[in-house]
Length: 253
Image (tube, rainbow, N blue to C red; front, top):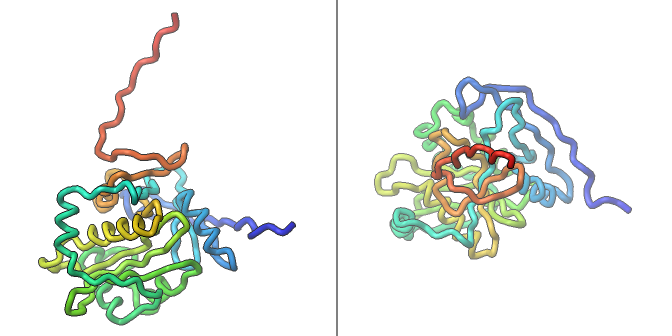
């Protein structure tokens, strides 16, 4: 018998400075997503904490750190809080379209404004049009660019998203960064994906990695119920809960 697809070969990157925790290094394990069963492989790896970037699936594999934790929102159980409901009403005039993964000059211009305002020194700051096209268009799986437009047609947000067997995986989102009339667009884009997943009968929205104590990651755990991937698999957790106190062992009788 012939296996559906061969077991993938995994590789490890050389250590480099961690972008989230100062003074630490990061290392990733990765494999290529290629061939007729790339989507099935991506689904399987996504369930164990891998993320996709172009034709590669990767996850952290650091020597002495496990701070990066995969998180996903339980879409059908999600109930927006008061501020999230207000935000959804604030932006309910936007026209939302799931487009094929082809880049446009308009998308790239929005990305450049977003990066300059929010991540001026980040790893994507020097991205050019070809880099952007590679990020969006080099995909072996079912991928969309979800666009968010005002009634007049102006593009104010976009998100590169994969549709997996068990949910939507938000690869990268960007939006108009300094528009006082459109506050909270990043949060709204996540809320919209949760609604879309629930309507499609998809149980989860994958948000990538969360690092406790990293201010730039805190937005990911504002959507509840949320699950994290640990040694025992995916489990719900409350990021705001205090850790359980240590209890002394019961003396033997």
